[in-house]
Image (cartoon, rainbow, N blue to C red):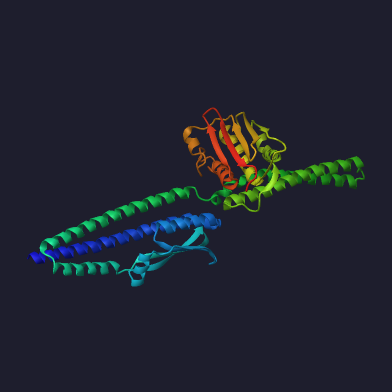
Length: 435
């Protein structure tokens, strides 16, 4: 009876081991799918933007924190965008050769807003289906060998050790689950800071001002031509009148040309922001002229408010950077002040833009005397989609874009200072020459 009871205990322990291994496998596969889904979701905006730097970073993190051994990213046509693998260690190679480990390929489709953008093929290393059964048989065989040579006390000690090993396995399983949950939480938080490409449409309204100026100029040009044509037909054209026509036409054409260039620069800037990449090379420009161009472009908006803008900038200060991006920064800051600081421009206020040449850097201080921000708003000001005007047309993207353009594109810094009732100040420090 004692031997029968002993064998029953052994078989129960083996059954418990197999069940524990099975549950460990099920939970691991479930967590694996969740982790891979999060990684794939995090990859989607970067694949859409062809952001190779962040794709490489995400894939390297995936290979380090999961059992993936190869990751291949392909575009929507099947072309290979990026591939990275990790090398198996000696132990894993040995298990793979004897059949205890196998590989499986997982394929995930990538789509952004319903549009296919590619695929991710993940090759993972897994224990073979019968691995745990082989291990159980090995334990069982070992037990019978030991039972034939050891006395009952030694057998009891072995069973006690097996019980401790099972408890350790359960403890390791719990630790693994906690680590997977922590990784998933990190991925979710990282997703909140992903890709500017999702909301380029939210700032497209900034194109309306230069386009409106161009349209107005074309209308005035058409009126000048019609007036000149009438004078010609009636034989009343004079040299003075024709010279006036030429002068006014040149002014209008110059204004339209300048705003057309602004539209081109702005579109290029928006495209660069969306892709998290810079198109082309930095160009040389005078900062004071750029600021004046920005104020000219946004002047129709300012005229409808009670807000004044004061500028202090050295006229000969030149930079080699991205004028389109810097224009976007100023436009977003001014628009932010009008909307949030001065209640859509209904309240009187002043905006100051002060620039100092610091040698290798330019220090641009932007400030307004509006309502300011409390600590809660200030701490979240640069977060994407955070807005204090939810449901009133606010997207919560303006300051996030400012931060990304200054820090990511121009390699600078942004410092925010604000108190309720004391206005808001942004200290922007950017290299004079972008490398």
